[in-house]
Amino acid sequence: MSDEYRWDKTDDLRNACIVGLCCTDSFGMGVDLRDIEVVVQWKATCTMCTLWQRFGRGARDFSLTALAVLIVEPKHFDEEKKKAADAKRKRAEKKKTMAQRQPLTSLNGTRTAKRRRV
Image (cartoon, rainbow, N blue to C red; front, side, top):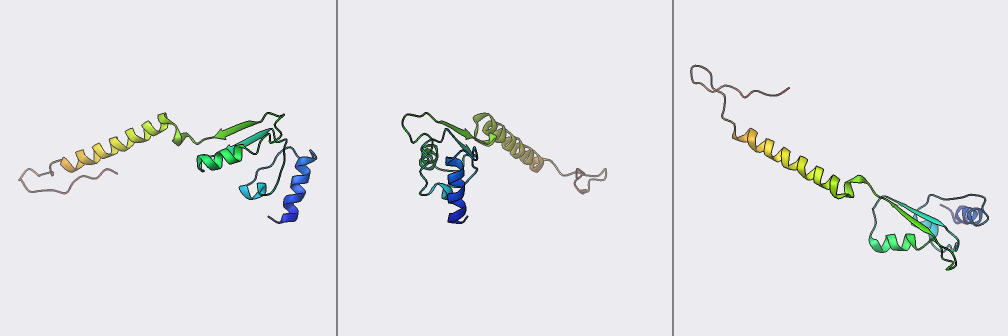
């Protein structure tokens, strides 16, 4: 992103020509917009310090209040973690069971090939 583009969009946001931006951290470097009302972080991909810094971009004017929203993927919730752990455990049990099966033998006592699931 060029500096010219960044400053144009900053002015557009400051002058209410646009109502929001989807941007990276590089956009906010050196930009002081004191009246941002909502900050949205999509995905929990950063440290708490970075998240705190991003949320801190809202309401830099102390007479205002801002809303910070963190949109988190389901994999970070306890219920989803439990489902994933249960599925992993079941796969391991099935693998162990398959390894413990006796080899198939024919009527004359010779060993035959294992059956494969198709």
